Length: 422
Length: 180
Image 1 (tube, each protein chain N blue to C red):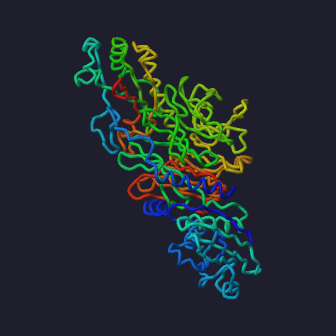
Image 2 (cartoon, one colour):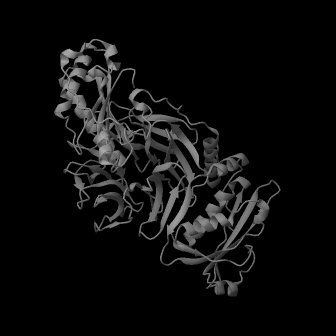
């Protein structure tokens, strides 16, 4: 049996404190057409650890919109043979059972068995050693395992998201688990915070803060809480984007006139200009392979998306339809681009297949902004407005699965989905 | 390897939990203390200024409501980054003041209405701030006295989604040393 020592001991206080502060709620507003029926049985011994494990696994799988949860009929240990006839009758194609045992040192060992009900074949038997404080994290790992086994793509339930919450006179840069739990503030300010961007290794956030009465780009180390200025030149400094190797940031500076594209080292040194226009160039984004930098420019008269070779060279226009196409975000596989288009006065999230240039509008809302791909490319998180209040929403790249993430009595905006945690 | 990464993850979570936000909250100062929702009732001013009306060396004039120097906002038309003629007199007064007070510095904050991308709106606000900066350099301000920056759509003077409100947010504000 493959035994994964996934987690080391962590203080219990952390989990308790963050659980009590979890504020972002996720609501499923649309699901896939052909959802796979899955039964997640209650794990034996789960009740002794006092905190739900399988309920988190179920919520993760359900939220993805790709699975339909079927009642397993009762607890099922990882060592037990699943009641195939009963599960078939209930309509389950796949079942997961498991057990939670507590070791002498107080840590828990959770073993899982995922079984194909039709073929009566075991699909996998992962095991996890974890503390009580890591139950949720373990549940996300289990959901990731099940998701990957059944879809062939990595799950993103263990990833984190960053976003900005604006309440009266207060802006907070928050980090939470992908399901909205464990919300923590990385930065609080009375001045706006925009454009958070995760470093490729997930240890840092670059963002723009206005605390100096002007936009300045910072790089914030999440583990230490320390940060440094990455760009604070005369004029405005904004729109940070990490290079795929995490060593450089593309930024927008106005030190030489209008908003133009530059690259700096992540420590703020070595600034150099990478494109030149007489108008606005902004919102740079590196393609996943690092070859191109996509950006928004009004060089053709209206804001459109362009791309330029990151090694220097020709700049070509990418969007042609409509008079307002902004905020390019490349999918992790590099094949498509999410962006915001103005369509009859409505600002909507669109997805372009880069090879065919075919574009699909994914939402029916009117004030979409700041799209951000999940690291497996399946969902796109974005900001929008419902009832005059800023909320986050997510939509699958086929437009079918939809979620809404909101915080009571506050505006949520500027989402950024963090990388896969390995 | 996995254990190592998990350890750093746990450390990260711990640190994030235990540490205070690294930047102290700042008190908003001067023009920046607008609260969202605080809708000003006056319309964008149309200022006719005759230069002989004020003494450009008198710093107290900056806060004197009777002085043109107390007026700090330039409003722009939709999708426009050109300083309208009606503001030339006001900018002329500030240009003279900057020339008479060479140690004074000015931060010009450009703003945009809320529609569309935040970063693109930041660039649009920059174009407005830059238009004000260029006008001031022709009217007596020195390059090293002036900095043009943008607040984009982030600090609206007016927070409703209406044409009237958006017009107040398409704005350049002038802040002097001590006000930013």
